Every structure is written in structure tokens, then in C-alpha cells.
Image (tube, rainbow over all chains, first blue to last red; front, side, top):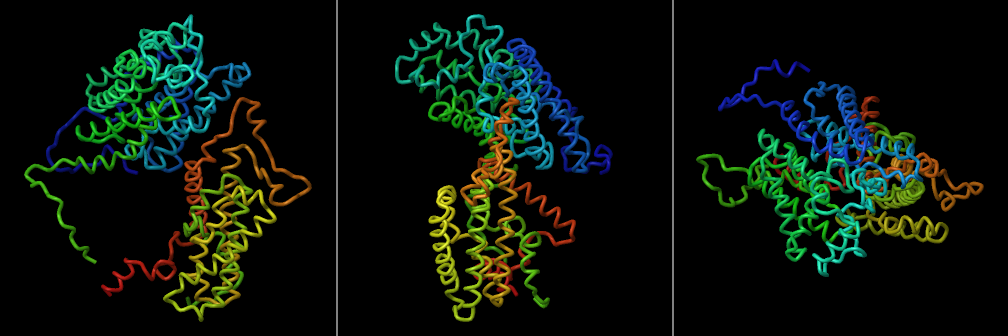
Length: 358
Length: 246
């Protein structure tokens, strides 16, 4: 393969030069992801750092090996594998040793295995089998997470108790508590139940929820720091607000209706799972989200609807990753529907089907 | 079709050159549905093989009697009779297999491989050759199912040949079970491989490997060799269009 940078690019005008490169964008995403990861390490201890390190290492390794085996150019420099590894790690919980007969080494073996399988499906299957960055049909980290979630349901929900939480009595995620029919009944008085649950230690209070002292995956716990990273990406122009706002907005509307107007309930639902992480960092992946603003809004609303329906009516507590995956697959269709009309071209009414020239 | 056909060649072609699942991409529905365990895969493969041999023989013997306009219904009737026979035998002697294969056993009637071979081969060739074709295709199908079943069962459930005692009794052998060893070091089987998503994944990978091996042997890329071999050619719009332009 010739050096890509040396090929003379001949393209139609306008010839706009930009300093943007894949590498710079990915670097910005990495920078934006760091605070949430640090929060995860602070809350869950050094094991979180192990998960992050392993996922990034395996992702980069798989990226290198698969490109090498497929005899394609080396793409480690664009940092996309690092981003995928980070996002994948943020979607894996620090395993609860109690679920492995209290043996730390067993939990560690499983952690390594989770990172390995997740990185393989993310990088090799989702990305490189389909042709590399820009060709993946879905967000690699999302596919990695879903493969893990489907394959190892007990390990992936073996959340560990946050180290920083002194009085927490349960490691279940807030969403898990809210979808547990024996603890929480949506038909009853929601406000009173929420106060009682947080008084009994089942739910952290809203401030802990916001800064991240709660059970959950490594990178999804701290809403504050995810939002901080999101603002950084917005400032740098890496992502447009269309998808996150419409995604989170749709979920809020659904939860407002389901919670009969109870605002703390909406807050618990928004901060409880991977919604912020998914909406800001994963749904906005360039390859698998629409280009136009209209398309992005449709994409975000679709994600919100699917996510809310899974959370409210499904058997699972969390639906963000499935929502994003389904909308990723629907993305080409949205793209087709929202293709902008070129300037000067008349609006075509549904034209009669032209006879196929045989 | 100038080359002379030999029985051996008709049998061996089913394994690699014209493997029904991996190269002709026929019969994918049972391939994906029943390969969650090796025993199911073998049971399905052998049942289909028996039906395939019998229906190929019958259709080949009747090929000059069946009017071409009603040949598809005629084939289906013949195939359905043999499937019923096989189903009853399995129900009587291997009830556990019948239970695990479920609806996919009677559905052999509409298995594309069987109808496809009837249309593409048995209706044009003498009885002995058709029987060999049926045997080769059936064993090729079984081999493909066996490979898929092996990968999926070992990775997805941590067992191999589990439940073999339902199929044949080999001195009380009940298959291998690694799942306890796996859980004892903290791991667990990768469940997605016995779910539909994993089925498609393994199918795709095996197909790629088969094509790679076939390419190494200088065989042509997997295709139906034009319209002559396609069972749908008679009603195919593309074919009629092509003929219209000719």
C-alpha cells in the first residue's frame, strides 16, 4: 500500500483546509474520558485501573495484530483503538470478589477474560472484519459490552461496593433497585418510596449519585465528570449537542411521565446507569451516527425511546447499550431519509417508478 | 456437463467443493438453529441425509414420469413422505433427540438442500448417481453442522458431545464436560456462542475458512455456477428478463 499522505488528493471544490485529523479528534475524546476514569479508580480502587489498562492494551494489540494479519496499513497512530479500549473498560464493572467464593485471583482471571473477549469482539469482529475505522457497522465498544453482557450476565452485574461509600449496604445499581418489583413499585407513591429507599441505604442520595459514589460500571458512575468531559468535547467542536440532548431529553420525558412528574425519580433514572456515558461518548461516534442535524435528532430520539422502553417495560434494568446498537444499525436508513436536497434542485414528489431497463 | 460423472466424485464433492451449507449456502435455517450442541447437529445431519438419499432415489427414478409443470409439488410430496417416516422412526427410537430437535425435524420437508438437489441433480441424473449425490451432500451437511456444533458447544456451554447417550450408547459415555473446570478457575463459558448471534458469527467464520481452503485448492469461488444449477431458475424474474433480451 502506498503512503496515504503522499497521494495527491483531487476533489471537487470547496477546498477547505482544516487542522482536524482523526488523531486530534480521538486525542480530544481520550482527554475528555480521563476524568470519568479517574473517578472510577477513586471510587472502586486500583482494580478499576487494571480493567482500564487491560482493555486499552488488548484493544491496541488486537488492532495491531489484525491489521498485520490482514496485510493492511498500521493504524495505531489514529488512537481510535485507545478510545475503544477506554470506552469498553468504562462499561465493565469491577468484579465483586464475593461472587467468586471470595477469592481475589478468580475474580482477576475473570476480569482478564472479560477484557480479552470484549476487546476481541470490539476491535476484530466489529471494526476490522468490516474494514477498519469508518467501516464499522456499530460502535465497537457497544458491541463488546453487549457480547460480554449476554455471555456473562452474572459477572457483568457483579458490581462491587464503592470504596468511598461508607454507609452503603448494597452493591446493586440504583437502576437495579428501581426495577426490582419487590423494592420499588412504580404504581405507588414514588416520592415517599424514594425517600424511604435512600433512608434504608438501598439508594444513594442524589448528590452521591451525581458525583458517582454508587454501584455501577467503572466509567458510568460519575455523572459530574462525564458531563465535564462532554462539555470539553462540545467546546472543542468534536461532538454536536444534537444527539446527547435529544437522547437524554427523550429519556427525561419518558421518565417524567412514568414517574408521574416526580423529579427525583427522573434524576435517579438519568444518573443511575450508563445513560450519560452512552449519550455523550458512544452514541456520538462519527461512523455510526447520522451526519445531518435532523438525522442526529431522529437518532437521539430513537435511542431515548428504545432505552426508556427497555428500562420501564423490559426485564433488564438497563437499556442504553441496546438502544445505541439498534439505532446504529438503523443509521443508514436515517441517513437515507434525511439526505439534504442539493441547492437548486427542485423538490421531487414521489416520482413514478421508472420501468427497469432490462 | 460433458465430463463423465463418477459415483466417488459425486460423494466427495459434498464435503468441500459443493458443500451445501458452506459453499452453496443452502439449508442455513437448521444450520443456525440446531447447532447449539454437537449431538443435535449430528442427529439433524443424519436425518437430513437419510431423507436426501431416499428422496433423490425416488425422484430420480420418477424423473421421466413427473410432468415438469407440477414437479415442485410432486417433489414436496415425495420429500414429505420420507420426512414423516424419518420423524416417526426418530420419535420411536430416539425420543430425546426428537424433543431437542423439535419443529426442525418436520421442517426438513422444506430444507433447501433437499429440494435443491432434487431439482438440480436428481431430476436430471440416473438413480445410482443421484443416490451418491444425496449421500455426499448429506454427509457434507452433517460435517458442516458438526463443525459448527463443536465450536458453539465447546465455547458456549463448555461441553463436548453432551447427551451422546441419547443418540448411541457407547459404554455409558455421556460426553465431555469442562464447565466445572472452567468455573473452578473463575471463568465461565462464553454463552453468546449458543445464542443466535453467536450462531451467525460462527457460521460466517467457518464459511470464510472453507472458502480459504477451497481457494488454496484452486477451486472456483462459491457460487451456483450460473442459472442451470439454481433450483429457482424456472420462476426467476432475472432469468426471464435475460431470456427476453436475448
